[in-house]
Length: 310
Picture 1: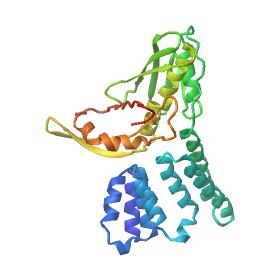
Picture 2: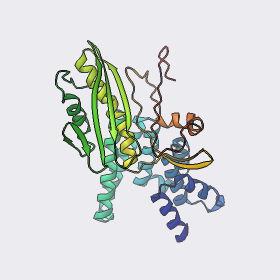
Picture 3: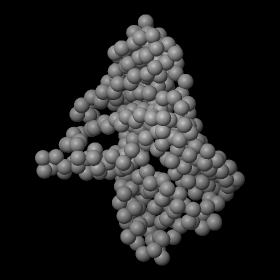
Picture 4: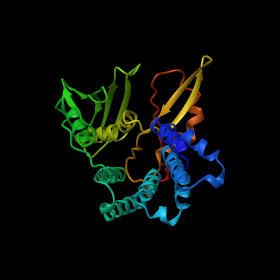
């Protein structure tokens, strides 16, 4: 790969133009696609949710490249995207192991960069494969809901509680939560997420059933944090899934698409789904309906029927 092309592709990557990277690389003569270019193509496939294509490309690379620690990281990323936690975990462990073996042969700066990257990703894998056990939230304490949300966020997002609201200063985001309904075993909580950077607030409602009202409240908070808040986190960290364009009143509107986690209640029957599947499934229909807004939150509900997850 020549230097100019390498510079262009890395600039496109930094700008989040992953679909453009795919188009550019696929437009090149097949004989010019060396391991470096194919590796960048696999990364672009990963960043656009095309994980099977990423795995196919990565497995086509030379044996030498497939023994490098970065290869194991890239394929681990693809397997996590497919919610294949076992393969994601084993491959990130191999990446960390090979990095350690090669530590004497690389600079301290390079080692520290990849070590931090891989170990942080290892923690992400643990979270995506996690079964959340709810906290018991005191329904008689007016501040208990916000305090519980804060406790779940604490490991991931730097924030503070100010006058009953969660403030995430780095994102300029504010969270408020209010109990809507509660009975012996169920709870419904309304959440309001706001930012001066948006043209509207985001409203989220989470309802859960637990062994008692306090546990149900905790489950609703878990659904909120592990659901929409992972999408807000992706947006503020610039982790773009897709770029799209809609039209409203003859005007074009360009979108950057970010996804949150799937929140599942009960048994998943051993068949976890990748959230990007739903974007790919409904993309065209969604773009027909969202108009010319600055920010738009799309929530997709799924229902289990006879233990089949649609």
